[in-house]
Every structure is written in C-alpha cells, then in structure tokens.
Length: 187
Image (tube, rainbow, N blue to C red; front, side):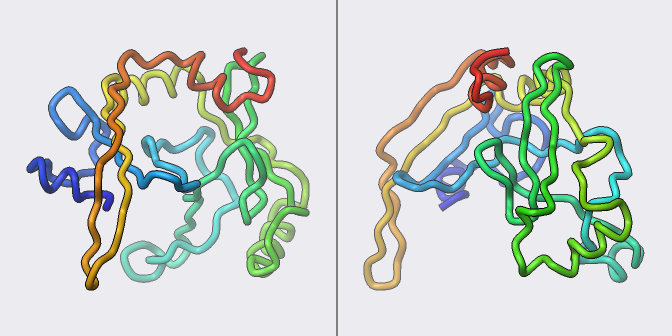
C-alpha cells in the first residue's frame, strides 16, 4: 500500500531528505488504523549514546560493535524498550526519556546490558532534537504534503485500495508540530 499510489503516479521510491514529487511530499496511510506514519528520519544530539542494541548488520556490513538506536516512539506512553518523547519547552527541545521499568520482558538481555553500561536511570544526557533543527528538517521535507487515506480490501488474493481522502498540508509551523505532542498544548 505504501508505494501503490507513488507507483501509479510514476514517483520513484526514495529516502532522500526532500519531497518525493517536485515540491510536494506524498504520504499514504490506510484509513481506520492506529499505525504511526514516519514523517522523516533525523539523528538526535548528542551522538554516541550508549543505549543502543546490536545492529542487525553488525559483523557483516558494519563492524561487530555497531549499535542501532532506531525505533518509533511517541509522547503518549513508553515504547517496548522504555523510551518516550518529552517536550522541553524551556530549552526548546524534543527529548527522549528512558524508563527501565517499562521495558518489555522480551528485551531483558538488552536491558541488562544497558544497566551494566550506564545504570537503570533516565538518560543522561537525554538525546534530543532542537526545535530549530526540527523546523528546518520538517520544513524542507514537509513544507507541502499530500496525505492520502485509503480503504483496503482483498479479493481472490489481490489487495485493492480505494483512496477516499486527500489532504493538502501547506506551511509547516513548529509550534503546531510540537504542540500536537505536548500534553500542556503549545509551548
């Protein structure tokens, strides 16, 4: 589904940090889903955090010691690895916090290694994205975005999509972006 509309429009798949259709970014999602939609990828500061886990390609494409810290997190509840987004309005940062008590039992070996390396407490320092950095990144990629919602059905082993709603989103504003995740509203 994710590339079906792009394929129909002749837009080649890419992971470039700019819109995928001239001045417009195209995002698609199934209607009636709770799945999160990736807006963009951006490494947090500071680099070299010790909370990662062995990279899937460590020892082959990367050195044996290569770590990964990729994950999908939000500000509603901790992820299965105990990470959560926290808005720090005073310092104009979106921070990642860590709660070792929220780590799912299937990640116990990883949690034990984190506790051994840095202890069970919150991240120190917390990885973060500055508001201005987010604004630049999102403003470049998402300044103009078409967001398509589709119903789906399967018949005789073939999946069909019916695009039912398109939104044209223009003019990215960091206050609205950060405010959407902040329990207290806008900073």
